[in-house]
Length: 259
Image (cartoon, rainbow, N blue to C red; front, side, top):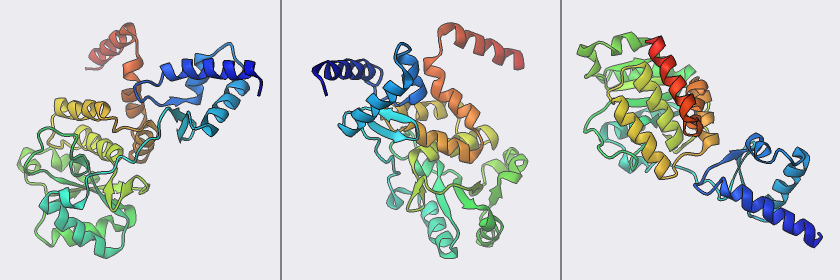
């Protein structure tokens, strides 16, 4: 490679790195937009070389970052609340795909962990009915997504032991405990759809804390959102920091109009 090419590649890398200084992942489409004067094929080739040189890392399909994205695993079985450990030990014997998610998988991201809270349990569809019956026989109040109207009633809300969610993709869990991105998405879903007992301000603090701790990989949180069927909302959440003041003002106005 000529000295001229080395210089151009270095300039390209330096400029690209400025947009990734905070651990940000960039999509290939976003990188193309940063260099409109350069042919996309040339950009792709330069990125390929940077990956080979170990200066850039592919973090997911079409996403790149300056450093490898670590597995944002939950603290593990020993850190689950006692009730969650009991449920874990029961469910694992039945052979269905499952994982504990929500607050149990977000230890370290929450400043004030509630003493008691409903367990969020994700199970493959084929096992939901059987597991619900088995757990209910243990005198536990077990509800599913179909029971969301019941959960909203105050008399029941504070007594629910377990909420079962349907899962399709179990790759974002380790040892039957959700990775942090999946744990947050499932918690967000429970709070916004099922009257789960975490306030919106607390949910927001958890998200901001995960951002500060670099506990969110864009590709994983998007994959988590797709599994939960809320991709539009989570994509909006991810991109909101990039919106201009006028764009935010417009969004706020639209929200008020909907109300």
